[in-house]
Image 1: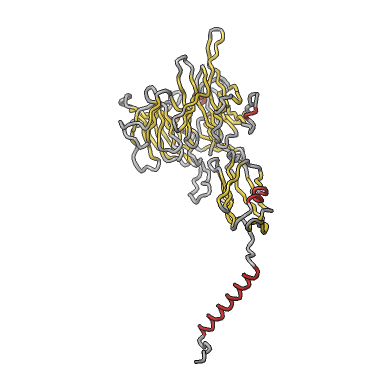
Image 2 (image 1 turned 90 degrees about the vertical axis):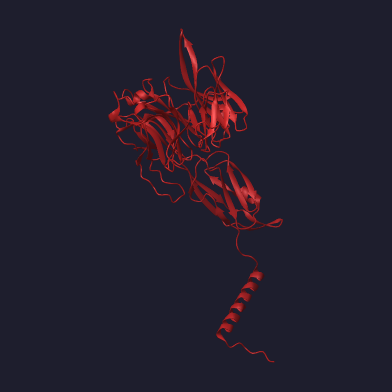
Length: 486
């Protein structure tokens, strides 16, 4: 039987398509793969990263000669780090957080693909960009125009922005991890007696900062949106802490009718459940994972879950220590105060495996301590007891201490005053502290008797090589209680 030629239109179309594809395949086989090697994905492209972002990845579309990539990869301005590989994906881990307030460029050209044991075509030139947040901090103003109000200062614009209402006198505040909201205690100026903020009249509020969400589609909230979190009708609000994830408030409250009834209260900020008391305690701080509380209880430090109920067992109890000053950002270590029998106080680093290491001792007080982002240096705000002519006084100072060697890397004397505050920038490159211009306590500033002074202490990259104290720079702002924004 003689084959018949297809006469149906669909048959003719199918034969034509198959012929075209056959020709295309033949051409491709004859000419080889002409797709050029290139970067397929850069994980930080056009993103705003923070100190929490420690590594980026470059993903290539085919096997690449690793040596040529490592030789040609450039970051401008330079960010020291190390390279690791997983197949065709490069990971670059920063040695230190990228300094805030910068724009960075990643360039790669001249690298080549890998074909067996030889190198092939040159990579398509790549350029990526990312940035870090502006350098900003919040403080409580003490000038005539913003006394007792929350103020945000941006080093780029150099313009203070007042975000709390004029009728509220702010006494303390905490910033959430993404700096979009500040939770604070304040008294209504109309209820104050003789202009002195009273703990008994404090209420807890939150206010929006006006900082746009980073790398997300969350709705922007303009600055100054105020919300009452805890009133003072039945309980006095004494102290509080905000969980690092910004979802939970823990407040120390005292029953007005029954002062012996005081406890820590857990307050979900999404109002999913009502506020509830969980445990009596002294000073306290929420752990970096936002799940536990470390609190001074009796003669020791108790660690228990935020989900605890009254009377349940502790997760852990550390009888040697008086209180917790701070945690490393990843929760791997805590800075704790130990009271010694010779009336001195020791700064002790306790790791998450229970290991202890005393790194510093003073005859005065240990006021605060902050881990550097790399967790190898701790900045300690302390006092030393000095006796002159039979009179004793505590002289404050700021020490940078190498945790491994216990060496004091720098020592900066601070003005003698009560209630001095410090804050370490998220990139670890500056410390801020406050000063009352007449040596008064910071609470007196709000009364209008004096103006607070804000200082910034730059931290040089070669801090381990310093042999003399660093000089602080005075900022042209009046206020106190500075806190860096993330």
